[in-house]
Length: 280
Image 1 (cartoon, rainbow, N blue to C red):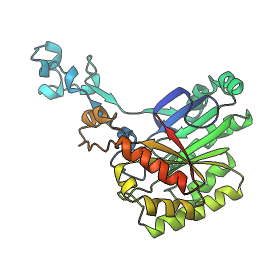
Image 2 (cartoon, rainbow, N blue to C red):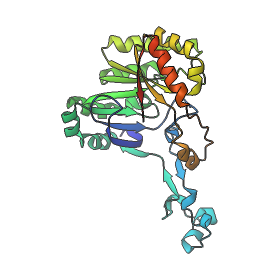
Image 3 (tube, helix red, strand yellow):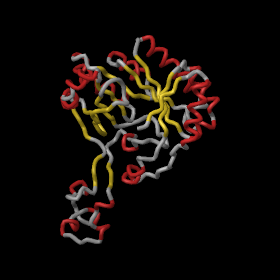
Image 4 (cartoon, rainbow, N blue to C red):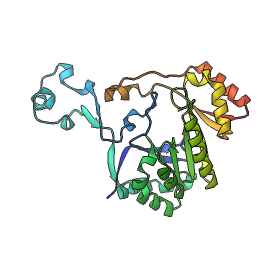
C-alpha cells in the first residue's frame, strides 16, 4: 500500500491554477530556502510542532496528568498530551484515502473549471506513490497541476507528464539560491523545453526578496534566457514565523520592502516581461 505524507489539504484555492482548486501540500523538499513559508514541509520524515504555550508546566500549573508525561520524568509520550502540546506536522494517507478526500470536491472542480494542485514541499518527490491517486483523478477528467521547483530527478519530472495539465514552476532566481548557477539555468532550460514539447501549460512564479531587486539585471537576463514572458511575483512575508518557533527552528525575516517590490515590477515590465503580483 502506498503511503503519502500530507502536510495539509486546502480547499477553495484560487492562486494555484485556473478555477477553484483543492491544493495538497506534500511533505519533503529537495531545497531549504531560508524564507520558506512551509518549513514543516521541508523534511520528508515525520516531525512535530511543539506548542510551549499549551504546556501546563510552563504556566506554573501542577497536575497529576503532567506527572506522567516524559517531560516530567514520566513514561507517557507528549503525543498523548490532552492539552495538545505536541502535534504531528503531517498526516499519512493511502492512495485510496487521498483520492477519496480529493473526489469530495468533484462538483466544485466541474462547476468552476478548477481541479487539484499538488504542492509542498516538492510534490514530485512523491510522484511514484501518487500514481494511483492521479489515475483516479485523470479518469474523471479532473484538471491536475503540480507546483514544483523541478529540482528533482529527470525520471520524477517526466513521470508527471502523463498527468499534468499545468506546471507552476517556482523559479529560484534569488542570489541566495541559484541566480548565479549556470548548472541550474541549463538544467531548467532542458526541463522547460521538454515540458513545453508535451503541450503542458506553464505558469512561472518567483518569490521576491530584496536581493532580487539588487540583482535585477541578472534576474531579467535569466528570465529572458528561459523564455519567460510572464511571471507571478510573490512578495516575501514572514507569516510563518510561528511555525518556525513551534518547530524549534531559527527564523530569519526576509520580508520584502514594498517600494523595492514595485520598482522591480516596473523594471521587469520595461524589459517586456508581464508581471502578475500575488497578494497571498
